Length: 336
Image (cartoon, rainbow, N blue to C red):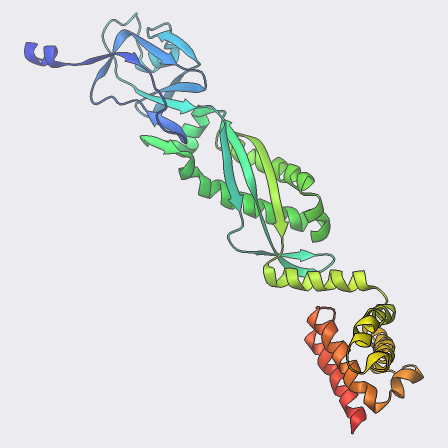
């Protein structure tokens, strides 16, 4: 090396990193063909770790604090370089900084409903989403398993892998637990704890520590939720006969104020009682079995009112379209 080249040569005296942007997990200190001066100062701030890598081999790891780089403070690097005495000349090595602070509010969720086997509903499709947080735990493992020689590695680069692995683990958890969807949805905190326990080894493999995992929602797709709401409504109604009588009784004041007065209300009440008996038999699986005499001998003039009551129950979601059509056809045959 000529004198001019030696003068032009640059040496690094201070090595440090300030996080100018959120979400950076690992970053390489810019070298640009410069060498680290013997006795240079390395500053590692709180919530950081610094890793020296020499010719692709992981060397020394530095904790938070101010370090003067000498043979004594670089034992592994000294061993890799085979220095048999204190070095005085500059040396070259890649320096990587890692952020150890919590990476908060990372979101996970099912982009599409997943299909699982449920012990109560059979096969269902469900959705789930939530948040999680983690931190860097083992920079050496993260460097060898994930980030490698990349200049910068961010949380966004890792999000897809973690999120998809979490969804796969959630699917397995549902399948293995045998817990019904309704019970799982009602115990989201316990579900989140079990999912976190299942994900801990995955994060550890990448040199990360999973700090917290929250399940914010477990639900069915909209079309299945409507079916579940109808089922809940039917359970709340209970005895259809009593429900129809209650509805007819409520209609008496309204009918008295309209044309026909209570005479019309009497027709509605009779139709409501008969409709309740008919529907109670239908919902108990006895649609094809002869029922009590009042349903069989229903006067022809009461059938339109009964149809109107059935249509009202269908509109409220208590009856399905198939059930309504079946009873409608049965009643219309009596008019012939």
